Image 1 (cartoon, one colour):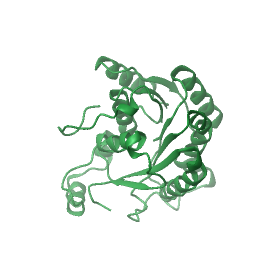
Image 2: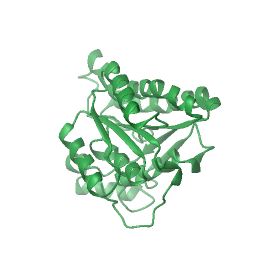
Image 3: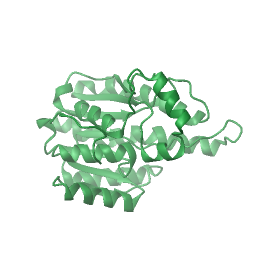
Length: 260
């Protein structure tokens, strides 16, 4: 939950008391979103399937003196459940005017093992829910006079990464979805942007893939010779959600230390 580095980072008055919905918020980058928005004084609601991790996160945020975020268990493969979770959290927090579409799963898979069922599953967990969350929340934003949707993409397909074709296809689709939604929702003062993280040092990434050799290779390719952490992505999301970025929409915002 803490920042990876010390610094005097921004406070955004426009985020105080704003209702924010975050998917996949229990761990990793999603947990950083939850913590950082709560620290700004926002009213945060988030969903996940990792109940113990989510409840522990909410307790830590409250203990730090910030508004306790509200958690609801939700499997994003079930769009009906997603809609119900959004409605329930909006009922508790007020109309949602910030949507952070964070949930994803970058499980590796080969071309040879792919089945139609697994393909559909990867698209559902990495792309489909982003649209349906936006569809459910957009009317609240329209009624409120505007809002901000932040979709989370990936540097993987920009880099031509192999070993997970359905994931990179879905993440490429997130950028197309961002552009289309920005055009359709712009007349309602709803901004839609996409953050493209590089290799972010979540616990999962460091446990599964960050070998000493991989880290050396990453530092050789990045312009900035520091690892990128979830807090670095969260701070970009804060700016995109705040009024400070009021005329920024339909754009990709790369946070990767100059890797890609």
